[in-house]
Length: 358
Image (tube, rainbow, N blue to C red; front, side):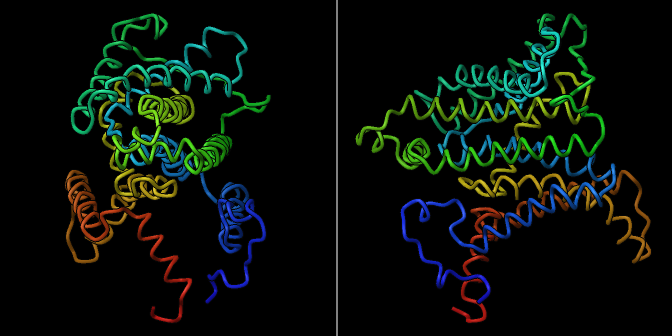
């Protein structure tokens, strides 16, 4: 009864098309933003920022980009790690070669480099789809690994492809402390998330979903498959490229091509599948599941073992963490194949009728 729409009348089209049409949703979002921007920096320590919150924000941003391509447009991609690498090394080259270039333009330029790379490796989507497209995008991963290891120009002639950045500033403010890095990642995620939400609700988002559901029928009614697919690759790779630049600049500080291996591509794909395909909020749920759950298991498994009188070695904890983590992924997909976003949607529907059962 507390979460209901009764009495919330819409008198014009603009109000009816709000991102959060229900007042309770708007208040909840404002409360979440207030906690994220005010309460968290005041109450949380450096370890939580560096180990949990900053990786969560960056992975949520990357999963958002992957969800646009895989969830909304239906184009399976295993090259997300390559797009992150191109974004990181592109931003690094602009940042290092142009003296005085601010951090934000460097991130945007790195995203544009990833956009060009994504469009190039998105061209096979015009002829193939499904697993064949997944293999084609996987080639982007191998190509990026070779490119940043063998072409020394991209890494300022370093032999191992390892690069580093320092003295980061945004509008004259140094980005050195964990709190400043967290606020930067949070701000980028909020801006990109708002733009992505409006994009998928517009005409181009409807084109992506039409291509996903039935590309032949979409072409019959006048939707251009080439424009829809390549635009999805462009937007997705831009967002993933910005996330890759943040991963290198903000989280790692110094990195090499192995930091953007194919494991990152699979991890992002798992985030999208677990969180919910074709859902903006699902990207956040999937990122939280993948980032937070292994850390929680690593912390609580020794405690639970000690309660029952069993001593587990560090290697045993690591193995048990992987087994439980994999089992939970399988269990979640069996319980709700549409992801955690679907569970959240069902919960909201139940809250609208509570305390009535139907």
